[in-house]
Length: 169
Figure 1 (tube, rainbow, N blue to C red):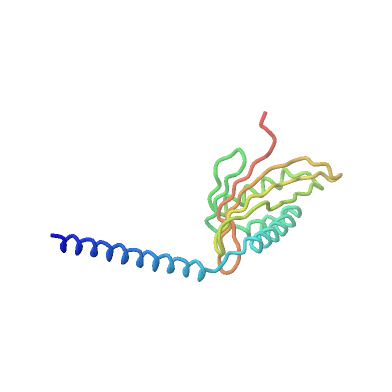
Figure 2: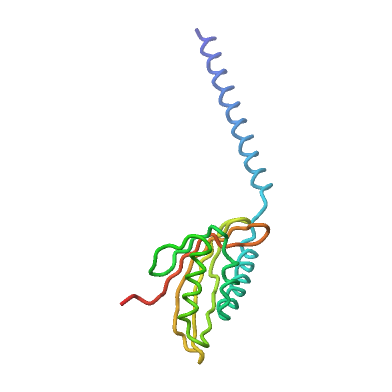
């Protein structure tokens, strides 16, 4: 009886030891995978997105709808302020053109990337918009969120949403 209890205790100890070794190997494998994964440099991506926003500014301020539209994918969706969602470039183009038609002469829009998160192929950007009149007085502030996807080596907007900071009356 005593030998079977001893045998049972030894078997239990071997199972625990084997289990611990397997767990340690799994932890080593996970650590190696994390080290092997390329690090995403979000600071670099943020700078890339801000550079695109700077180009977007130029296009918007010169009322170049084609240039603004080039930032979007064919199947992009835009959730514009106070209207139904816009699906595809054609719908977005009409909204851009209508927006330009309402734009005050001499007004200047600026876009500031506040944050990006994601990876080297898909990032979400948050930012703010400021529009000044010809004299430099702020006439509009707003915020936006854009999802950018890398396509053929270029960042393109696949989704965006934006709205004004001013409460509707």
